[in-house]
Image (cartoon, rainbow, N blue to C red):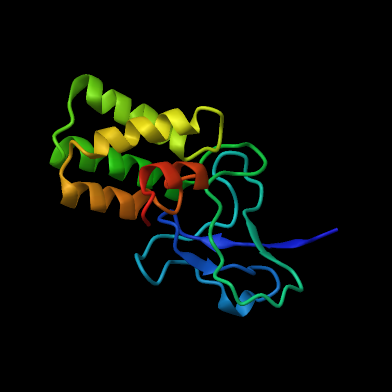
Length: 159
């Protein structure tokens, strides 16, 4: 059975150490990129955050998980990216009222891979066309790594 180490990540999603237990000499109490205190467990259920596969010789970059595998809640970095994207769309992009609510609902759908992902992605793509190119690009940079693969293909087919 595959065994994983524990990851140490700040609330903004910066990985401090993807092998917190096996390589404690690389642990950092605070993030070197943003200064926030790092965490090794889900704030919701307090179970460990899954890190790198032990005894893996892979040199691929470790990507922090978007959701807790034990309780299903979004990790702080996922929540912060969703919130920031919504703020960009409403404050800089000018989405208001029903469009703003549709944007928020669509964001919540595209970060999860469910039967509604295609609908949410189509709505989000349409709403992004209303916020302007620069704002849409900023939103893309925020959410691309937490968006499901299905949604990415619909929203940004050329990327």
